[in-house]
Image (tube, rainbow, N blue to C red; front, side):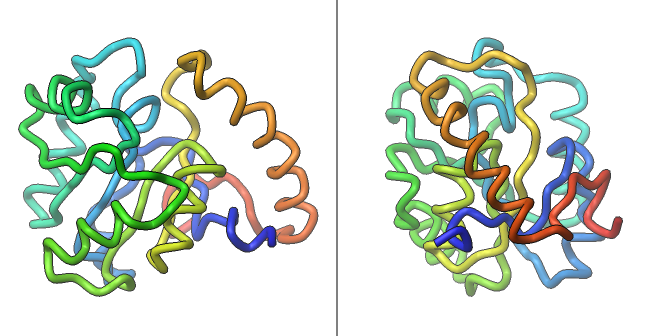
Length: 176
């Protein structure tokens, strides 16, 4: 049961995920959650760090696709300035959105990583889809109202995960 929540890696920040390290793992595409992973849920403009990270992925020819449970209009408005492709209404924790994006790129599950800030949606969806996963810390300490409930339950799940998988620790980068 706990295995469904277990991330492949736990990296402190999405911006610490280095394209070269992804390639060393055989990863050819990055899928990412939107709110509090890629951008702060209350700041849709992104940061210079985000733009730098996106450029590094582009230079490495690693596509970045947003996989979000938000509706089409909300996701489009958020990613339009970033010119990112996306899948809205992804139905996470189900893996449908991730599988659809991988199929669109013609990639196998072992060539994809899903990055997100929530165990109960992003990590479960990644595990359902059979792809690698990276749990990152939320960009900001506050959440939209509908995420606060998940955070409450995630505290319990995280304690159980760490107890069952003692090697599961926050890292600065993939190769830590």
